[in-house]
Length: 427
Image 1 (tube, rainbow, N blue to C red):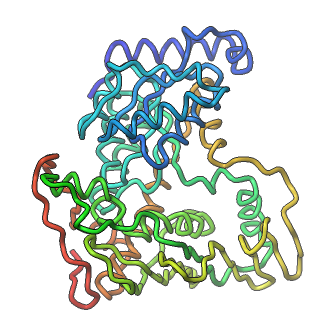
Image 2 (image 1 turned 180 degrees about the horizontal axis):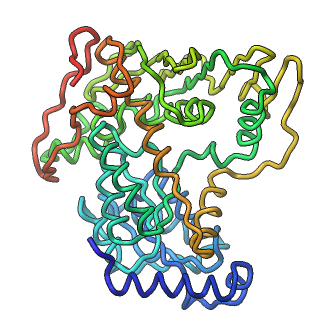
């Protein structure tokens, strides 16, 4: 799909201005007629925060279009943003640019925006991302980027298109934009703990969005609407807890391994606390094997009343590195080190980097690692669900498609049974 004439002209204007004036000058000298117009897709959860950070990242950004399935979420998001003094005057969403329904993302794309923030449930992201990039839009895309391997393959194709079009694609793997973790990874990569032997990551939390009782489902509400409104409890929408939340820990493992894929993994998981409805697990533990013999272990749990922790333990021949279990990362061994550098908001940093790149016309593209870190988590889920050892090639080429090809807001959608290791088959 070709960019529309209007989109191409607007991008060329921003490009010419950036080249002619330079980044610092354009920020101080431009008028709001040269604003970067931002569209938000997904107004619940992460959406309002991403919009706030986008508006803070550049003094001349404007939020001009939003989409969601729920008018109340749209209203609440806009009200919240308008209460933030620094950005309130640049929340310029007219009623004609508030879009509801499953096709709202397309209307945001077609509304004249320059940047789209994707903050819907992960199952929708491959399609939304492809539509944005094919239409010539810069994108901030929250993690994870898919819930199945066909979606990952689609995203990898889209990433290449973004590169061809010189479009920015920033991923919501926020730890990659955290100064503490950036320096820590540099230390480990430089050999400060010697040869890495193992990585153990924990993500023990309370349930994120517990499934409500079936008795609370409004009369006449379709299966599709019910599941989307409770998206965290359905694998096709969230990918399960390992893929939706603990993927942050998985991404740090991938980062340490220089984003090279593992050979294989095995995993365990299940549902210890019964839940009415939904089909996700409440705990996982995955053992990844890398070509150099390094093992990486990722454990997550979502249960109330249990020990909570979000930490990383990296073991090397000359010491250990600990992230978490304290306010700053540290290394203990032949060389002792504690992070003493600058701290800043990693969520804000993502957007600062994105909008600076748009202004400078120096595209950055996080897309490949966004896709491969997501697949690394999906691979672990596959191993736990089936009880089998899964290779990287198997995971990447899996034919299991979780997203319905045709989704009718008013349609029926049976919920597949929760996976049973040893019985559930790898597809």
